[in-house]
Length: 103
Image (cartoon, rainbow, N blue to C red; front, top):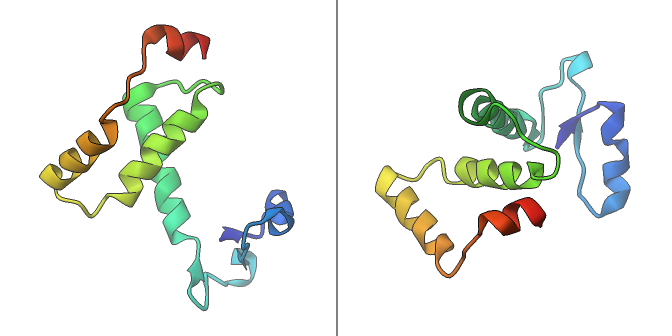
């Protein structure tokens, strides 16, 4: 779900179900479609950029987006549930500095 920015027009033919909301004519919700969720996500990502990282390289941008999408999708978890779910997902994974900078 996006607004009607022309840059999003190609999404419909790329395997995504794409619904547009036309803010310029006062439309903010269409059936169950709205842009509040994605606007909330971008706000969270921007706060992470400004407040935590201060720089996100294009090479690793997908990692930052994945981290903040996880944060967004688990925002209703309590602190201990969030920590527990995160620890479970970390099991068996290791990222060395060499892999990070050379990968």
